[in-house]
Length: 417
Image (cartoon, rainbow, N blue to C red; front, side, top):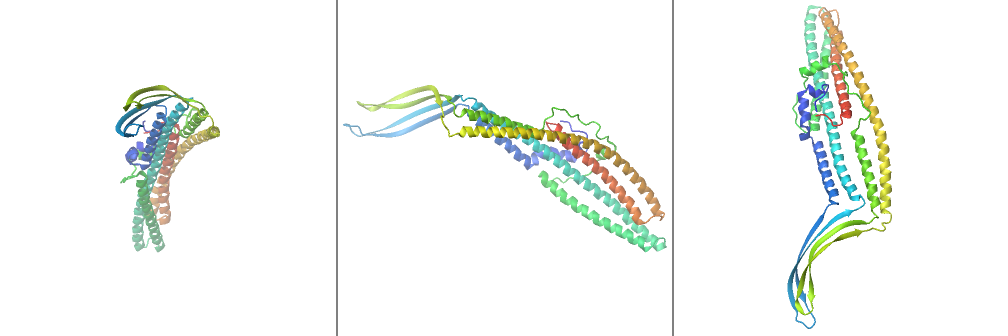
């Protein structure tokens, strides 16, 4: 499907590549693929119950005979047989078993899609977290460069007697604080990068840089203007899984009802046997053809089938209640996500204004500091305020994208490419 224009991979090619490679690199997805294969095997096993069973038997024997009034006799004989069996009517139990097997395959596919969507969502969130830290490091380096320049300027002013030693000490302290903060950020980034590589099961060597397209998106995009409209008939993966279990329990009830009913099978076969002749040492070998109908009827099973039915009835009702409650809960969560998107869109607009105000304040602060009208602390505060506002804008955009990711994951039943 087409990528939503408000999702980060639309502007970050690195992230798009990571998401595209997840099916090949993720061990978690490979595990879910094996579940699908396991379910396909179960479906074949269930389907085989209503199919034709064919068997072949070949025998080679050495016969030693001691007949009355005759000499001891030894001979060899070879016999063969072939049989087939085909269920005819089992009161719907065979069809129910086959449908349970097919349902297991559908359920495994649903869980794979859920896992893939959840994994992609976590990868996006983790990647954007690293983008945020990388940007904070960039701002920290710029601020550190400014504090060093301020320290050099104050040192020269001190020599000229234009400032006090206290002002220089304040500038040195601010520079040291910035170096410590920057070191902590770099350590955090290194650790989070390793965790990200481990999470995607690959050595990514990514830059986590904001692209020009992403910068333009953060600064000018109109957020929350074209949100998909909620419809009353929307379905959820989690609820569908429970509904599949409800249908399976209905089928198990039918199977339990059939346990104490006669079951009819078509049987047929070709076999050989030998008939002894009273007046001849040689036996007569016969070829026989068998064709008929078999009826198997279990009369009493000590209430085993009754217990199975009661268990399935209870589980079916429990699943139905769970599906109703979960559907209401997810509907409320979806509406809440939509409201959050509208609120976050407004928050981004306000934060953009805050960035502009902080930029103007910093420019004025720079002039005031050069004229020695404000202290290094006041000037540094204007710079950190600008950094915080820029970080707040990026954080707001990331929060919006993470929320939009959850929202689309709910309303797009088929997921996103």
